[in-house]
Length: 133
Image (cartoon, rainbow, N blue to C red):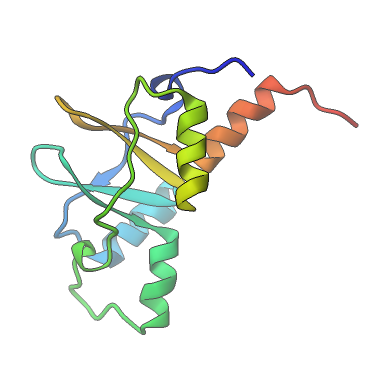
C-alpha cells in the first residue's frame, strides 16, 4: 500500500467546541452533523481535549450530566494527535496502539486543523483494494 500523508486524508475543517460548551449542546452537534466526536479547542484554536461518543456512554452510565455541565468535565485531555505531514500508516498504527477511533490533527502554528477517524481510514483502504465477491 502506497502511503499518503495525514493531511490528505483528514477531515477539515474539524468541528470544534469550547471547553465551556454544555455536553447537551455537544451531543446535539454530533447528532446533527453525524459525527462521532467533537474536538475541544480554546479561543486560539489550541487543542484542549476531545469528547467522543464513547465518553457519552460514561456520562449516561454515571446518570449525568445534570443541566449546565460543560464538556471539559468529561473530555479526554491526554489527547493523542497527529501532524498533517505524518504518514497515514503511522496514524493508523497510533490509533490501534492507543485503542482510539478519532485522531485530531494539529499544527504548531494553526492549532487544530483536522481529524482522522477510523471511518476515514476505512474509506481510504476501500478505495485502494478492489472489491472481491
